[in-house]
Image 1 (tube, rainbow, N blue to C red):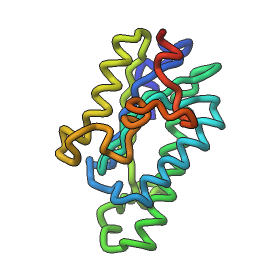
Image 2 (cartoon, rainbow, N blue to C red; image 1 turned 30 degrees about the vertical axis):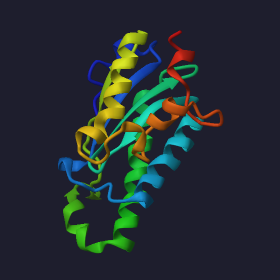
Image 3 (spheres, helix red, strand yellow; image 1 turned 120 degrees about the vertical axis):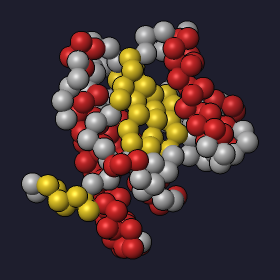
Image 4 (cartoon, rainbow, N blue to C red; image 1 turned 90 degrees about the vertical axis):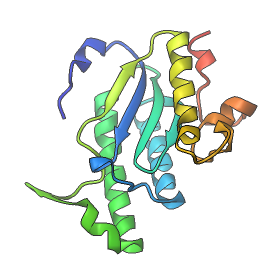
Length: 179
């Protein structure tokens, strides 16, 4: 995965990130897979000294806003996050819904299966206004998709955190970074 001008933002620490399932397939099937993703967020946030400010998990893509506490490790974070979530999701699919296994077969070099697209998109966030725009976009994704009427009704999103300001959340409120 090329850096695509990411070296220009090496000293930046807050990003809006989107990554899609391979061929935009609906591979993020259920709560078990969403838990795999959330557990990997926890692990890699700790590993790379980062915090999520917002997220939404949809059935064929994810969006999130990440803030690196000390140094920008976005490319390494995404490499590891996608590698290990892909492994765990593939294992889940093999064990629980093998009928969709043919959808993820991808035989190139040593790779046999593919869950995520090779690239990810990121936008550096340097202002409160941009952060709020991206936050609203993330939280309205399930509404736009017709899954819920209100953003805070969607379980796999940070919308409820921002609605009720859960004090024990693992999320970093954007107001702490952009006062």
